[in-house]
Length: 317
Ligand code: NDP
Image (tube, rainbow, N blue to C red; front, side, top):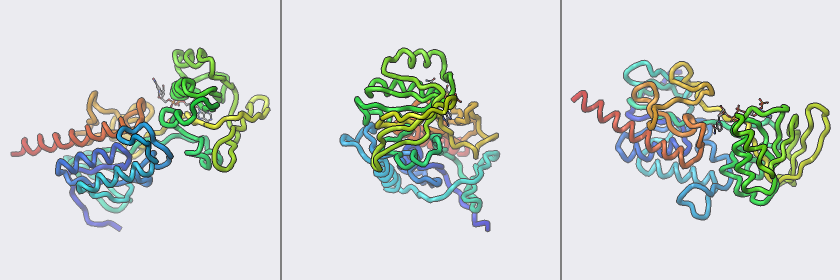
């Protein structure tokens, strides 16, 4: 059933660090932003445990708590935060149309897209059971917890290669599980992995199950997909680095994207190819993917939306 339409100055899609930071800035600039959270309010960080690298939390913070703090701060300045999922967009006109939950249409003078990216997982039950308790999809975020310990990483692309070398600096030993007998990563990245003495590469090897004591990871049961031979590798950390998927299906054929589906923004800016539509956070960043960089680009998006509206009003006056 269709509901009445609503018009807003600034609509923010997504509730991770980028979306909430954009909301804080937009609200303080009096744009009266409306933010739709999506189906995972708080985004990827709500699925992790300790966050120790976000500035301003000297003792670290739980991911859930941090996103709660972001939300409260955005609300404090008047952001209208709503639980809802955007099901379609139409950016062809002067004002942008967004449909919420297939029912309600909101028109907006500016739209800030902060829909993030989703880490790909192997799909093992044990992987979700120990997610945040030894299993992670972000070495830069969680590698520090495994200093001087043995860890495993799965994947053979540039991300896996980069994360394996990052982990090798912290961990005692890194077991790299490569499902084929070759890497997908660029030659330069492969070279770095092959020349790191504490990385052991297990070719044609896949994870069968992550093993734990009910609380934390204690090992990974792997099998060789050629010989079907199984073995248990004792590790306390298990990193999944098989790629991310930006949440951009909604914008297919509407906004410019790269071959992996990441939104393309103008250099040094959060502007997309459509006037008044801005993108920030992981949805447009496959390189850094950090909460702090997402927050920084959220700030940029709100400032750019504010300037865009000011220029538009000036042109009309
Ligand atoms: P990719 O898609 O390039 O690589 C994914 C890797 O994961 C592949 O090796 C793939 O194996 C493996 N994989 C996928 N599914 C499974 C599974 N179920 N079990 C085991 N292994 C699996 O993703 P990346 O995140 O590595 O890279 C994405 C893009 O970002 C690329 O274009 C990359 O070049 C770029 N990038 C660039 C960086 C840089 O320049 N510094 C850093 C990081 C990323 P298989 O090879 O067998 O398919």
